[in-house]
Length: 254
Image (tube, rainbow, N blue to C red; front, top):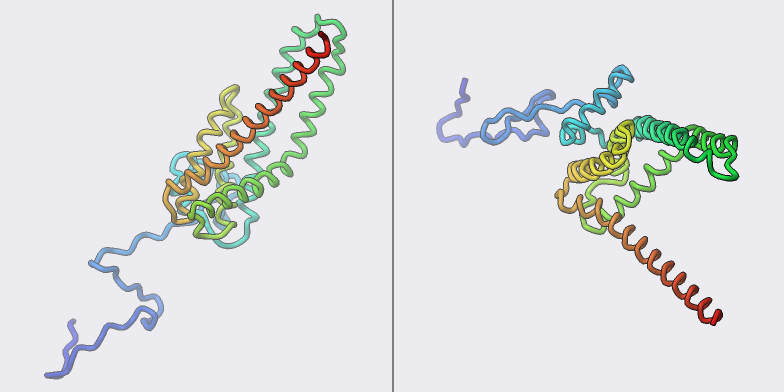
């Protein structure tokens, strides 16, 4: 029912949203319904079954990464995202080491005919090292998460795309860790995981930092380019040093 006013009285201004009764949601301009509230990631929802939440979150990251990062919480403790990264990172390292042990076992027969071959030393030591790596893998994953997050956030700041805090970058890195499960795929799993991780980093950083995918791509790719350039410079310097040493020895041999 429309409100009526006394003759000549001006209409009353609308009540601002801050003074409306609790539970009142003002309609958006144009009368369109308000956007639906996104639920948190299953892994982050209180009371959600742990294994089911792990699986559903991983499936969401693989099949709909934009929705996954939009549903990712940017507040609260980092405990659950870090635990998520450790679980998938550990699975990836374990799969990688199992394949490594199997490959070394297949090569044992080929190497056994070489002189000086000791089957105990050659087979036992690598297996011991692989098992040790599996045990300390969670620590390596934890260190890797924060180191790579710091690098990404630094380059994101350099390109002007860091609009939220460092914790947001850590969360993106943690959930991109889902791709480590691809290490289960023999031979090409690591390469697929690397390429897909780059895509997920760009999508995730752009969403959580409310920046463009171009700036996010620069923040992701520039560290890799810098690393490759540094490796190339070191390689060239090392090669030049060896060449100079060989030339120096040849000069004395004359």
